[in-house]
Image (cartoon, helix red, strand yellow):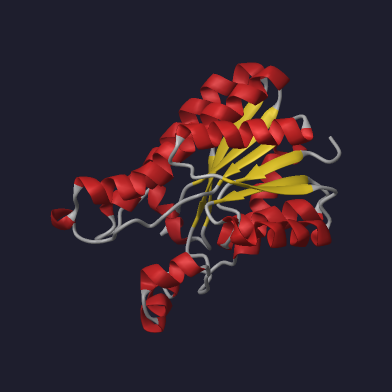
Length: 249
């Protein structure tokens, strides 16, 4: 299909922004979404410069069902369809030992990473089922398959994203929709910088990667674009670990 309509949540920074820009470069109609409308029009202008025939920014907080219902409905009203959805909005929450976690710190992470993914798919699949086609990519993490001290809630949330992806793929396959996940490793984003805290801490983590470097958001975007396209037409229910080899160790 030419000019597919692509929705990217969490599109204002990092992996989400790189993904939106790469889809635009490939000529997609890109709907970018985030919680900060201030630079929305600037982002739309950049998407058009990168090659998007048309683009839009719609503010939405993925923690709220009504906001996601409106986001998907506005996308379809504006562009007539929804071909690809990248559910990228996420948070590291409040890292710390399990003994220090609370119901509030749990909600601060799970409401975005898990509930947000669930509600996004709920409304995306509502449209794609009627179309009889579509591709959804959820963004998990390498910590969707392994543990990390002092990050139990985040780790649990990214495991949950993979579980949601597998189940949604089974539900969606009969009506022609593919659902997959990508699990990035250490990617050089603002979130990675926040979590590591210092240059030395970042360097120590990166030294554990077999390729001896962090990835960049554009590399993740390249894989997402491939997973969404016809070259991955037989791929569903799977999680691609894009991590420089770290999950093989």
